[in-house]
Image 1 (cartoon, helix red, strand yellow):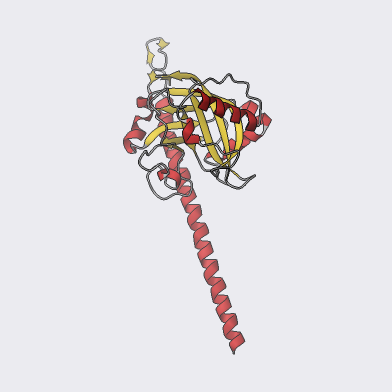
Image 2 (cartoon, helix red, strand yellow; image 1 turned 180 degrees about the vertical axis):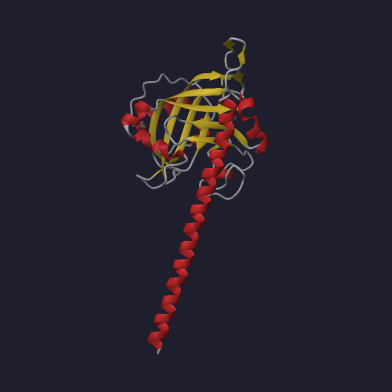
Length: 267
């Protein structure tokens, strides 16, 4: 009798675990699907602004109009005042809005653009960055998702072929459209005191020339490739960070230098 009761209890416990696991899996799937649909909707909004047809008059076409960041991204800013820019790398899944919340730097770690709970989160800028100032470097964080979304594509820079085929990154703010050349790709630890750790917040603005030189030396030591770009303390840099799992609390960091900026862009 006791054996039958124990077997029955075991079956019930297994069933409960199975149900909870199934519900969690379905919930995660639905959450991910909702996130994908939300991001695609935002991309569609941006595409409508940047894909305007040429204006026609009489027998000839007029050039396509130039758009400002406010015209391209203004609707997203109105929808969510935390919107700070847009990050994209051609030929990859990276094509996302960027958020910034000075009062709570990690607010979008587990929230979507609509501020709902989300496993994916939204790429976000370090609170130390002033995205409206050319004197401040840009530091962005994003999840490394198993399905290849968010900042997972950055792991592709471990391949020399990928590095060669994706030399530039586009990051737009509400004040300018920017293009950045990838200069270094490094793996670093995240724990304080770890020899390879890099405090990214300190990279927003160099406190002095030695701070920049220390950063450059660390990049040279840890970069997967020789640094061919001429990096100077006055350069406007973009640093992208995501998790990587070759070590405990590992990070993959892509460092890029701004090579083009403009207050307008042709649609």
